[in-house]
Image 1 (cartoon, rainbow, N blue to C red):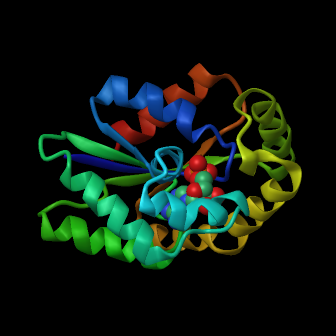
Image 2 (cartoon, protein in one colour):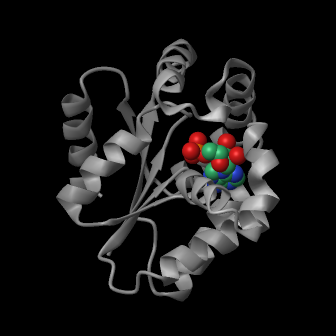
Image 3 (cartoon, rainbow, N blue to C red):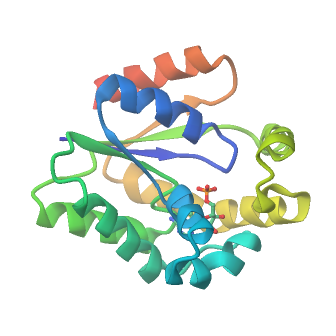
Length: 189
Ligand code: AMP
């Protein structure tokens, strides 16, 4: 099993790189953001519960997020491994994921941190908003999401760094170059 966390601020390119990685490594991609958006567009009870939270750029409570994530992993018993994208975003989520994987005799092999500065993120998300129409990509909500990343999510890194699992990859440049660098990191996990 190869379990990877793709870590980085909103707009770092996690979605783009995940799509390429699942093809190369035959992993299952789990994006908690995509899952929440799917629940919202299907108007499920979970979707109704989190709709406003996403619209405001805030983090969904850990218990809801962890339950959804674990359920998604359980749906893929044949998986060769997973790419976790947008999860974990809090230390509590990281601890829950470790405990959950341990119970299955598995672990996180490594964490790829896509490094992109705040100015670049804002430019990219403004561009994405023009095509995606994602409500949480507008300027005010974006600031909130960036704030959530730098006030809460960033603390997940030391948790994994203490385990010697974090590799930093420059997230600015050609998509192919970034992909090659991520693959080198993964191949060394
Ligand atoms: P993303 O597409 O990863 O940027 O996620 C979009 C939104 O979904 C975030 O702004 C949060 O509201 C919510 N979300 C996604 N993943 C998580 C998570 N691991 N913990 C809490 N909220 C999350």
